[in-house]
Length: 321
Figure 1 (tube, one colour):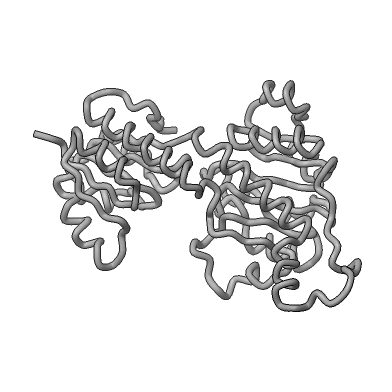
Figure 2 (cartoon, rainbow, N blue to C red; figure 1 turned 90 degrees about the vertical axis):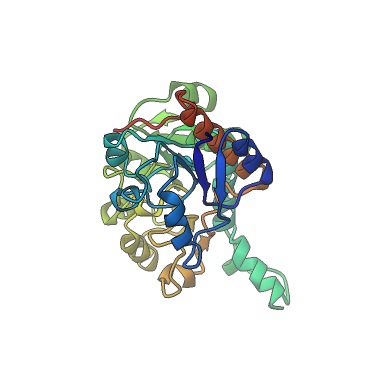
């Protein structure tokens, strides 16, 4: 008898077909108020689930007594209650590495867009305000040969360092739980304290996972330490930043701007002051959102799921902290 699986996110048909070779699949393109009751009903007999963003906690797991594998289509897994999963001997997996290059592209896009005011100037042109030569009040700042500080030099951070150093001649400072000697050799990255990084960097890029230790790690004190001319980039998780402190820093001129792909509340609420600041570029959590990368991530998640249900150790098993 095939194990029963729920796929609760829209994925390529090839991914579904792959899982169906070994499993009985119930498929939901998305979960909303209409589909969630049916999802909960299916969960009672499910041996595995595959998707992203769903909060997998005690309440949900109590509805899934047969569950063996939870497969996240994401490198992050702050939506998973790992201690609860471990206690129930349920395997949890994610999809690291595959999205490194794509997210690094997004980081550079936000950096360039914010520094050169590209969205603001695009609107200026399209609304017919371009009547004469560009005056200095519309000028941006250079990215090339500036100092980039990366907080969290893992796979994505290293891909950002590669682009910034080799492509834009930027000097790289980084702060990490451990030294990244490979990045030091390849990109001239310099390991330093968090305080030194904040004080010296022209651009500060936050690339840490969301954990209890990293929650609101960028707060009032940290933004005050940055240069008034510095730009803050966040493509990690919204909760790694004290958003109120960021808003204050931007309003008070403590930093020059921000490029943000993630927010404390997603989707961001329309009364959030960040949406009305011209020196802030916002994107809707699109770090890995290309057709190619999302397909690879979904297929890897499917491989993790099937592997776990077949009694094997999944290639990307998340270990409880």
